[in-house]
Figure 1 (cartoon, rainbow, N blue to C red):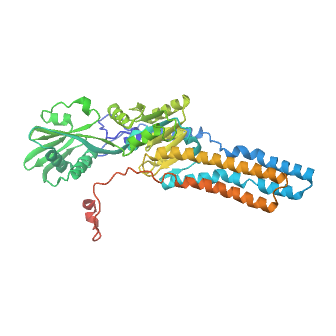
Figure 2 (figure 1 turned 60 degrees about the vertical axis):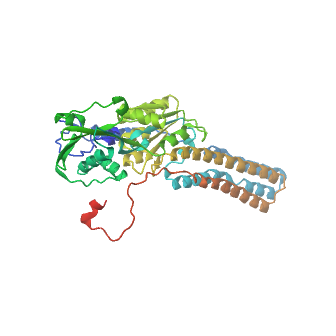
Figure 3 (figure 1 turned 180 degrees about the vertical axis):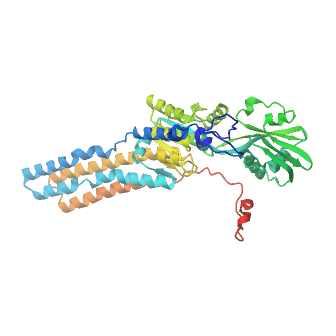
Length: 480
């Protein structure tokens, strides 16, 4: 039910338990009774929350629009006054040519086009250009956990063995058994075995999987059980107590051979590469930001949320909450006077994304609902784009201000000289063109913003070294 709650692990459901609409049955067969339909379901309520939040949003006015109402009438009045008192048509024509607001009109669009180009090159798709203005005023950023601060994929964090077993032996035995399962825990163990260069081709006989509890089989004549502590205890196996303080954030996979515990494997959701560095930049002074709060909201367990939040450097953590509670937390931050950005990837993040001042969806791995409700789509899942966005916003608004000051200064300086008779209409055309060209050149500096930004790519465990011939269809699964 990660699409609703954001949990990184599948949740077991027994007879009589409630199930959210939109969740996925990973294994086994269920008979479910539909209690709510359409807009009454949790998924339907999420949709309604998105629509209500979007309707309540107000657009941010651009800086240049504030000057449009009075500029043209003022220039016409000045040119008319000079013509009336001097009876010199060339002076009035020069004034009108100089005052043509091309440079002023270009001040905003040229800067924003350059900024959008720089953002798109780095995988940031900005839907509403006014968000660039809002980004520099952010004081709080809200992060989802699963799929945003973490990769959303389990990995082996710790291996503990009993006497007589080595770590590689325990991982190899577990991998050989788990390779017949499609559970996320099994995938994590298989990945760990590949990283260690261990073979997972040990023959397994009498393999059986108990849904949500574990797997068992015979390896070289030995009976092996891999699964939850309670399930192994049901088979009469004595399991040692695991230190809860150090393993509270882990999902424990116990292993027993011939009725005796062989050890356990701890798994957790991996923190996204670059997350710690990115949050450090967001809260630091490097980008001249005023981000006082970095909040993590998640539906996952407190133990897991606390570990991830403390590791990446969040100031506030809120766990075990539903989508409407996430949205309420964002509204409370806004009520405190914060300008809030929300970053998420799932359906459960969509209401919070919609109600934020700026919403950023992890687009490459995110859901359609999150992308459509967000104003910015982060296509490559690199969190270092967040401090880049803040820096780009600051630079864009600075360039727009520079353009406006430059163009306005040129206009009024040359306008005064034209009124005094020092500027011929032909020279006025040249000066007008030069001022517009200066604005364009100044805006073009934004295109190179972020060229040296470092990516924290997750390197795959397997790479293609050669391609000799097409793979037959029946071999596709094995080849992958």
